[in-house]
Image (cartoon, rainbow, N blue to C red; front, side, top):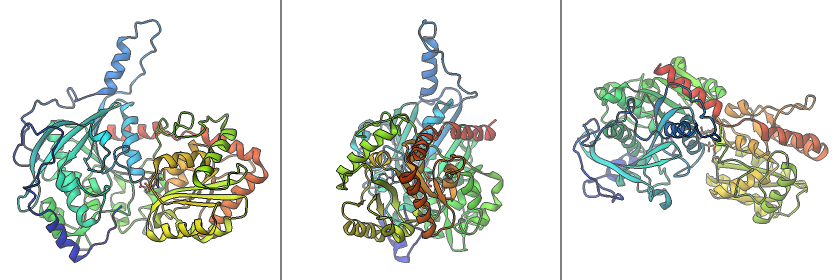
Length: 568
Ligand code: ADP
Ligand code: GLC
């Protein structure tokens, strides 16, 4: 993820970077554009229109339900599930989405929440950039839906917008295609490039909805990369049919805000002067803050856990926006994330050496542990306790605490597996520990989905000692795989992990409160004590974890209610 820093030199490059785009304007789309309109978004498309409210573009959830209903006269057919009414249409706009492109939990949410909403009678379209780094297997599935030229910059510079579509399991994915902005990065680079590309993306996403004439009830934007959407909607798009839509802006991580100097953001967005005021985009008189502008103009703000919704209104967690968030607290809600329980299912997970359900978890986790140890070059012994850590290696994740106590964890009975990439100082320190404790510590410095699955299954406990954590998904996935989470009581970690109570045998993990290495060590030692001395109580916790509901179902209902609150 990009940092918030900027330099004067960087500003110049930002403008040079996309010089003379006219020549390289069009990405060679799968098919050539049928028509290339002129001018910006709000222009009427030449293609046939199908308004969302009357008859939407693919409405697979409904069609599935109808199909079931139509065969229900057959004796053996199951009854059609009751879909909640009324139907709602929602456009998700964000910068990543599993399995196309993912750097962290945002990608998981952009995948799982639309699918959960589709099951709740929502018609969901997900708009994302068509990055070149999206694997060929997905690029091949995209179908060209149209293209046009869109005015973007203050000097009238316009850019190509292509729409490539893929419909999958009840959700429509529309990829915004433009080679100038999306042919580099994985998917982020640095603010110099990312500010222009996300000024472009927010406007292009709205322009694409207008072009497709798909006017949703709600436009649901995610993080700073989509935060200009509510601002564009209430200004440059105010006279278009799209302005009937309501907007929700979800904060997945307040640390990232999209801050740059005012002239640069004004140039790339061509937003009117009046939005650059201290109550909207302007911050500290000289900077423009894209997230802050979005928070001002959206109809509802959500964040990904109830505790984080409280925390971000305080100076420590507020990242300089606490006062702004307190001002807008009336429209702020916390809705905790879930995980996709089909994607994360230890019973059917093909990546595991020995898939398992709650009943056979104790035996099968030992088999997965042996396979993991063999794969990673650790001593193969199922009696060792394996502690896992799967994380972006950044300050947010409490890794300085882990570094401080790691030598104290190496006691002959414990192994440590780290999977992550990120800041060089953490990558180096974990590599150093692997060298110092060969066979006991493995630091796998990479992004590796398959290995992540195997660690969730083969580890006994998973560490998440974050400094702050808006929600956190690794503790939820661990829970589902019967791997006991050891977490710091902050944000979503506090809301999703109930500390083990040795008197009542309740709880599903181990927790500590203050950000202190000694307290992390203490929590791990409590876990170890239970594991090594009272295995039956540990095993019972493993089963409790696996039976806990960590799905999206409940939270998706909260989002649906929010949409209904906005458009009764
Ligand atoms: P964040 O979004 O702050 O990175 P989350 O806990 O919400 O944290 O989500 C992290 C997601 O990324 C999880 O799905 C986790 O399994 C995955 N992940 C993180 N690092 C890696 C890695 N190195 N390899 C594979 N998956 C990873
Ligand atoms: C962010 C947060 C993480 C959260 C994820 C998905 O990346 O750091 O806590 O789980 O978004 O909402």
